[in-house]
Length: 205
Ligand code: PMT
Image (tube, rainbow, N blue to C red; front, side):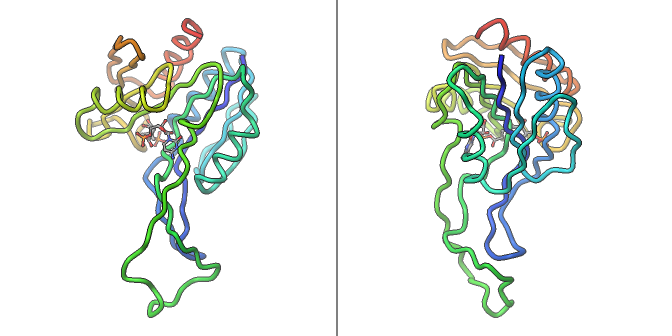
């Protein structure tokens, strides 16, 4: 199978040096890419700004902003691909972007934001897997994203749990399916969770 995987954060620049972003390191997404490639799949990894080495046999496309990530996904995705969206994409970007560094005196006191496109919701592919990073109401919020973005599976992680979520080597998650079926995964290495995700996709797609 062909996999397109998004990973890491996006950066939404306000000027040449200042941006909105989040603490994603790409560890979860790179682990999924590695697991898919090891299982013999063709893998394209669309990565935001992260400090990780590309896993063997993975084609990597580096991007910075959500709009660049969307373009790279659009160009990589074929109708028979599996899309796994682990990236923490910024939902909004500053409406105005200065090409140079703004002086302190020029800085706006209020930053007007405009919505970014939802890459996962717009994508059309054979099987779509999303991730949900939540701080409360984990299952309810993740199930609603699963339905709203027309997903075949969503991996819900509570990013307030110790050892789970952003920048850790481990994660604790629940796999959710559109029919309401839930599979709880205990705390484990992100690499192990990634293998389980790939196994699950291979069974369902
Ligand atoms: O990178 P790590 O440090 O290892 O951290 C891993 C992680 C916490 C980033 C990862 O496990 C995770 O939860 N990723 C999803 C984070 C997120 O942005 O969730 P969300 O609930 O905001 O988005 C839901 C889904 O829609 C995600 O699959 C996201 O990639 C996708 N999305 C969101 C917004 C947008 N504009 N386009 C999208 O494709």
